[in-house]
Length: 415
Ligand code: AMP
Ligand code: GLY
Image (cartoon, protein in one colour):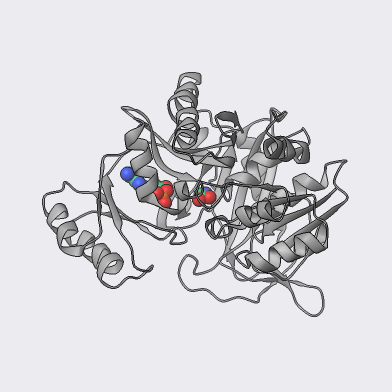
């Protein structure tokens, strides 16, 4: 079977790696892919949002299955167009992907179906948003209603910060013309619950936790994620059942009821608060970097699982009992400004997923993004996996990368 994976980051590298283990898959293509992915897949230089060229490529190559990684590709309707062309595609339609691409859509859905989440109000004009924050308690959370590459959420500690965020989003249209959601600030550990969803049917993947802050001890600026681990000892069986039965299953059912059945990976960004599990956000795709620690634990065939969802049958998902930890190696300066083009040595091993790399003319890997590599280790305990992952990171030579050393430590260390 021939599979096309759309995207070119660590998540797509992990998906390609999992597909490469399937006995049914003979050829893998990635669009656009990256230098690391090119060891396992043929990279084709088509942008992830260039729908017409992606469809033309899939038709020409007689692709048997398309797997979509990034939200931007879903939001422009790549799955809808593949389906129209008769090409099986794993991922939600544009309409169903609104659960991620519009915070307003997601919040209204949760409100209508009593799915637990922070209280909220939606505003499209600056004056009424400002009047609302004048009477709001702080911190308060301000979210741009649209895709903003993970940058559209501001936790305002005071009125001045809220005013600045609203000015950016509603007066200066920093992310484009749009609305904002202002919501109640919640507290508690966050976790990522990804499920394969086919209409009302929900098939959970293993839980993972991302680390959003740049530096050890959860210090420094927010990033796209600096590391992840799986499983999660702080989630009890009761928490798990609550998340599945009061959030993930009702959300899948709500989408069907609204005439927007979801197919693909529904990602619940959840928080364990003192008042129960609540939704922080939904994504319509595999999480990055959570996927890079969850898929290595899958021992059954991922191609079969994708096809089962596409065809409306039950996927078989079998997991190992290992603990996986992955550490992001990011360009110095990230999430702010950073330079690219530094040579990376020793980054070929099987447990390194490339997030942002390219080749130079001599075949060396070069840094080519904010987040560059994701180094994964697996062991019987999280503590051992952390030690192993850090040792692997230390073998990689590059003068412009930094990383956290404490990924997963919250789960086994008392601070
Ligand atoms: P989002 O893009 O909605 O996931 O928001 C990014 C991050 O902002 C989340 O991972 C949380 O850490 C934080 N956040 C979002 N909404 C809230 C909230 N209502 N209360 C507290 N923190 C939040
Ligand atoms: N790790 C968070 C995300 O994929 O959006």
